[in-house]
Amino acid sequence: QNKGWMRNPITDLLYLLMSSSLSLYSVFLSRRAHTVTVLFILTCALVYVTLLEETPQDTAYNTKRGIVASILVFLCFGVTQAKDGPFTRPHPAYWRFWLCVTVVYELFLIFILFQTVHDGRQFMKYIDPKLGVPLPERDYGGNCLIYDPGNTTDPFHNIWDKMDGFVPAHFLGWYIKTLMIRDWWMCMIISVMFEFLEYSLEHQLPNFSECWWDHWIMDVLVCNGLGIYCGMKTLAWLSMKPYQWQGLWNIPTYKGKIKRIAFQFTPYSWVKFEWKPASNLRRWLAVLGIIFMFLLAELNTFYLKFVLWMPPEHYLVLLRLVFFVNVGGVAMREIYDFMDDPKFHKKLGQQAWLVAAITVTEFLIVVKYDPNTIMLPIPFFITQCWLLGIFLIFTWTLWRFFIRDITLRYKETRRRKQEAPADRDRPLGNGNTAAPSGRSKLNGSSDTLRQRKA
Image (cartoon, rainbow, N blue to C red; front, side, top):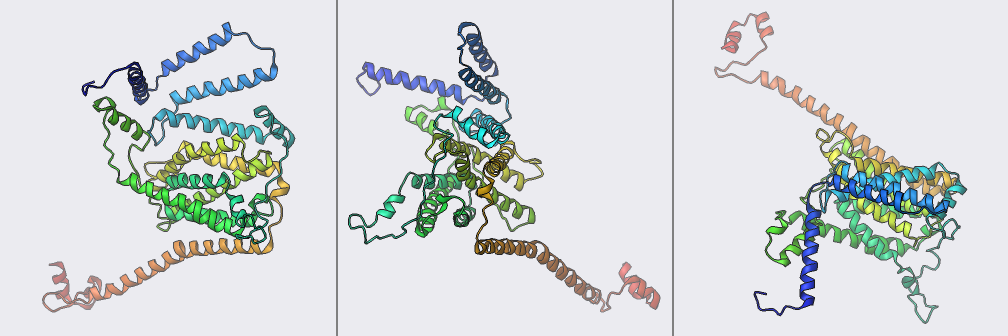
């Protein structure tokens, strides 16, 4: 208006919408939990359902709605009353919400674990009637020729057949995992180790059978490697970014306000993860445990949909990945704090505890629902490779944290013993040498004793 712009109803509407959005956002920015407000709205909703709504005579529908209502009430309680975690952006309530979702998901897994195999699979029909039906797994192996001369129409058809929705999913997944772990070496180790796991377990799940170039070129180098690279670049930008926050209403321009809103979804401050696995035994075992749990959670993604008969493109598979994206970062931060500063963080964080419990529960469901697949014998040469790897890790751990330390302590003790006689034989200011007091008394050397006393 100051620049002489022509005002019209559309512009007024846009300004009104922007002002309303900023007003709602200012409420969102407040650090108050709004416990009374949430309790009042929840009570009004329950009163409406009790007094003004007629209950349908459908038992299945009422059961579903009752379960959903119970979960919503628990989420309302948790969002307003749960303990805050290490993250505060975009809002502490956002992370409290995912903490409560973690509890609900773990309880759901426990319920599935206590069902029979048939009942558990048929229970999934209550969530989606299309579930509960065995589905064939797609084999990603087969013809592994990069250039197929027999196909004159499209010799590179094998490459195009592998370019499905999982390619961007791999890239995005490893980009987010890099933001969680914040270490290039750990990400690459997990990426390569999972490809070895696919090689080792392709006799159990058919979709682990992939071409060599699909394993090492498309997955490790292209999708995973590019995702890790972009993640490390983002981490470098976040580490150098100045964290000086200004109140929303103290910013004079709308452009500055919108930029401030966008930066609300970035960290409030930055903590660089320095894992240092070789510094001591505790950190080394912690890093090994993190890598093991990461790989187990990755395997659970494939085995769960296999034993519960869920197609890869089903929305429940996607929701599980979205769930781990939101809770994984908090869990990794809590694990790092617990490992890096055990005097201040005396117990494992709540989100890390729940994520570990969920990973173990998912694996137990897989073991219970399809033990025949899990117990298929691994080929002998693959078993030898894994035993060799475990032996090398055990040997290096024994040498690095036990044999090497004992050797260093022995050398240090020996060096001090060798330096002690030299100190005793070192000449004093008058040309005499220092000798122990007891020996000088026995030898009758009173001069040396008086000099030492002086």
